[in-house]
Image (cartoon, rainbow, N blue to C red; front, top):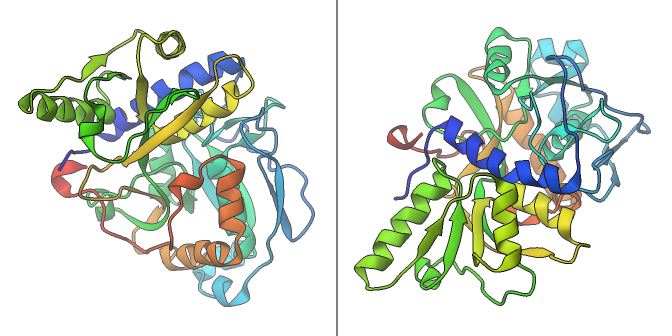
Length: 341
């Protein structure tokens, strides 16, 4: 099975995909210290507005979400008594659109991840309190009890289960981005890449998968050309000029870039996805809490309520991430194996 690389390499891949989108859109997504950039904005009671201040990355949508007392009753007494859900997001220093970044007011944390945290808090009858930090400090916050749960693109792995418990909420996918006019699509079969020139970020999980496919094609007498560029801006210039056929990167970053160039002379589209965990396992992104905290089940139940009510689908659609939907939130589902975390 093609393997995931380390968390650092995964984030590097996501950063590579999103860095150019910030340049292309002229978006200054900057952050402050760990408690900065956490404004939740004013939303009427019983509703959550997703996609606020997104700088065009999302379609602003107000969703009606009320407390479900049968689910909030499952919360640990300490969290229920506090009246708030402290949500950790590891988006410092520069954010990673469209998942988490500082919005157009230059202070409020926006993105698909904080928005889902707000929706879940509403189902639980709790006030969301967002804490933005670096990726490393995100886990320090969970370990110390300063953060109840992370909504921050955390991949479910068996290694992490030694310290944390999970409630899954999104597929962990890679994707191919092509010019909108291209008629090529990836159908999940590496053989469809024969004859193409594809760009990928060096040292990333997607590079490892792509090079494995290249090796398989060579063994079959077919060619796949893999290209590298110094920065993502150069990658997209090559895509627009026809020097490469496709770019292979993290699905969320590609979803964001597609929204940013939709009305330009060189629009792009998603030509197909592939699990970040490889062919044999669908990688999952999950809400992450301290092991034995008692939070995983109420979090999963809250997410499943959002799925059943249709609000989950609207949240994903607002952020152009519908192709990462899960049918159900699971508590501690199978994650990347210990030899592949």
